[in-house]
Structures are given as structure tokens and as C-alpha cells.
Amino acid sequence: MENKKKRKEKFQDIAIGQAEYKEWSAEKVAAVKAAVKEHAAKRSEEQKLSNEMVAIELKMIHYVNQESQNTRKPIKIADFLSQYLSVMKLSFKRFAEGLDTKDSNLKKYVDGERSFNGDLAMKFGSFFHTSPDLWLKVHAKNELLQLQENKKDSQRYKRYDYTTVIEIGSAVEANGARKTSVQVESRTGASKKGVGYAKHSAKSYKAEKSLVLRDSGSKVRGSSKVAQKDSYVPKAVGKKQAR
Amino acid sequence: MKASPLKVKIRKVDTDEYVPATIRHAPNNSLPSIQDGWRFNFNKEIRKIKNAIGYTLTVDETPHITEGALIFDLKFEQLAFMSYIEIAPHNKKKPKRFDDVAGCLIAFAFNESLRLCEGDYKALLVFDISEEKWVDQKKLESIYTKNYGAIPFPMGGWCIMDAAGYALRERYLGIKNNNK
Image (cartoon, rainbow over all chains, first blue to last red; front, side, top):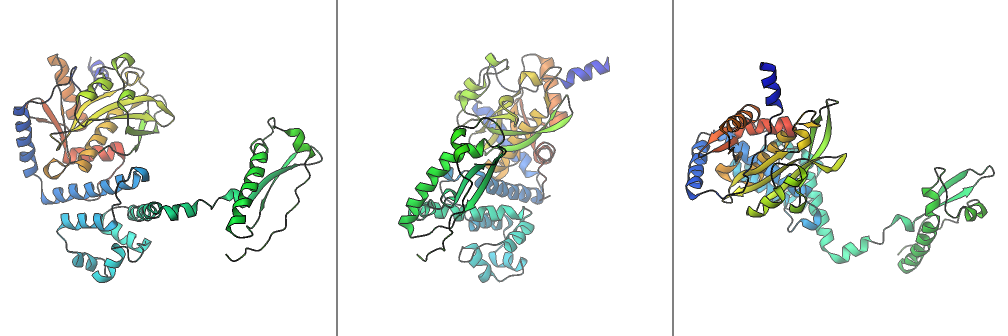
């Protein structure tokens, strides 16, 4: 009998909700607020501090995990640090002393005058009981946001593309087996020529793309063309010209 | 306000192994309904609740199958509240596919109380238990008390707070409290 009861309890539905949602009455709101206050008053100072610190850590994690396009405003390391110090009622100077460093020196890293680094991340992580990489992630995210914000800078990065540098092709050996080779070429010429070269390489990459993808032995598109292609001839590799 | 996706692990009952799953925000129209065999119309009820957010738990291998659903909101913009929570029909009766779905969702909701709420309202998750039959009411209260550490709150309310909530976080989300 007891086993049957236990089995029933095991599969009991935990569903919570109202068949038709109704807002709380003003009376209930007041009663719950009073209960919250009563329970909160029983919390130790250590518990309250723990809750606040966990909350800040969660905000940092949420910030780091948010996609860049959904991030309205960067939240700096200084902002999170300020929240921690506020809940701890700790001065910046005392905090710096706790890290065996001068506050004037530490301020430069926190304000972004000097780049936040792994050593500081380890110290911050240890001090606030968080993972050190969380601090580095905040720093990295803000750095990227800053670069992306500047349109001129973000346009500049678009020209860097592996398809402008490598040429992927394949050749057919005597026994019919397919051989792939990858050749790395250095980019020659000024930026205008570089653009033209990029287009050419992109075309040749696209034309031979199917070959690379189908090299496992399945049917190859344009296989007759492949059979006719010569073995790969290395192109002359030029030196990079000064811009 | 909505949380970023959270990776969790739930137990696959037939193999007794833990599989990766994700709790993520679900648009209103993708939430389950009575027509899908669920008890509540999540997709309709959420529209009645101000600032409510729907979340679903899915196994990473089968992201199109909802294993559990939750509607979370902030009562009077301060109090973390679980308006609706339910596990999928195929996880309720024998042979159920996955275990720990409810625990993960409740722990997630408690986690949100830490992130979103201020002051006294931090680390405090409230919900109502209101079943038509007294027997069902008592059974549900017992489950939440024994399995999730809930305590009674005024006027039919229940609350998971502080140590009980942190224990759920550790057990179901794998997050240890380093600030004890």
C-alpha cells in the first residue's frame, strides 16, 4: 500500500497556475509585503550581503551573455566594481589595499586608462568570489562594443578575410583519387589592388568550393572539368609592400 | 528584463543519464496550450499578466520539444512570482521521459529573484497553490514543501527563499554559492 502511495506521489503533477488568471487583491498585496518585510528582518547581515553579491555577479553574467546588438549601453568594470564596493561599504582605497596595490594605480586599470589584464582578473575574482574570466569577459565585451560603435573602424575590419589570402583547390591524380591542396599567398599591392585581388580569389574559391566540400567521395559537380584541370602549380609568392 | 539562456542538465529516465538542456525565453505564441495536452494555456494566460515573461526548457538534442514551461513576472514590480509552471504531459506519467525539469525551472525562477529584485525582495520566490479539491491542494503543498523547501505565505501563497532557494540553485543549476 505504501509503495503504491509513493509511486503516486512520484508522478504527481507539480503544475501551478489558475484556470483563469486573476490579479491579487489590494489586501493580498499588503499581506504579502508585510510577510516579506517580516522574513527579511530575520536575515543575518551575512545573508543580506551574500544575496547582494550574488545579484551583482548574475548581472555581470547577464551582461556578458547578452548579444552585442541588444546591449544598449556598455557597463564598465568600474560600474560593477562600484556596486560591489557599495554593498560591502568598502572604500576604493581600502579595496586597493586589499589587493596589495595603490589606489591611484588601480584606478587607471579600472577607468580604462590601462588595459584590464589577467592578473587583475585573478585578484578581482578571488576577492569577490567570482570566476576571474567573468571580469575579463566584461572588459572584452566593452572593448568590442567600443570598436563596433565607431563605424569607420568597423568598416576597416571588413577587408580582412581569409578568402582574399588563401586559394583552395584540388587536382585529380593518375588513379582518379582526389587530392586537395591549400596554397597561402601573401597579398601584394596597395589597398585598391587588394580589393581587386580579393574579388578574383573569391570567384575562384567559389568555383572550386564544391570540390572541397565533396571530397569525401560523393558525386562531384562539374567532375569532368575537374578531371581536365592540371595539377596545382604554386604561384609566385610576393613580398608584402609597405602601404 | 528577460534572462539570457541558461544551460542545465536533466535526467533521462530510461538511461538514467544527465543530458544537456536549456531554459530560454519563449515568445508568447510558442508557449504550450491545452491543445497540446497541457493543463494550462500558457500562450493565452501570459497575455493577461503585465510584464510577464515565458520560459521553456528544452533538451539540446530536441529543441523543438518543450519539456517544461514557466511564466515569470514581478508582482508590483518588486516580487518574483511564478504565475504558471508545468512540465510536459510526457514527463508526468509513466513512463516519463525526463526528470528534474520542474526543479530546474523553479531554481531558475529563484535565480531571477536574485538578479531582478531589490533589497528585501532578493532571494525570494513566491507562487500560489490553489487547487479545486482539498486533497489535491494538500498533495501539491506537500510536494513543494518536501521537494523544493517552500514555506507558507499569506492568503494561499507559498515562498521559496534564502537557503532553500540556494540549495535548488546548487542542485538543479549546478551553481554553488561562494558567498556563504
